[in-house]
Length: 108
Image (cartoon, rainbow, N blue to C red; front, side, top):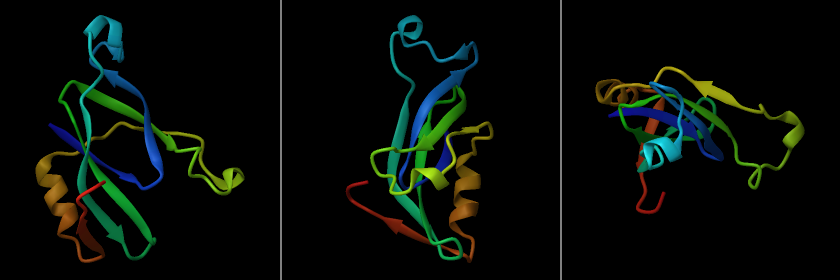
């Protein structure tokens, strides 16, 4: 499994695997992407970042702001592609940093 943190209010768009852009018809299923019930609160930037788990076949993810929750769309980034997913060890390292506060919620 691989992991990534995603800022509250952002969603996953397109997904790439080993063969390129994820094709649900070819693979007969969507990619396994699960929002965990764990987030970190970055005190310096005042943002909440949720932990997501993805299957090993996923190489890259496009993430973008959720347009239904945006208040000022003129000051936001359109999309970002995450090319470096992290391991479980790197998640634990990030959770252990002094500038973050870990929160567990029952309903993500």
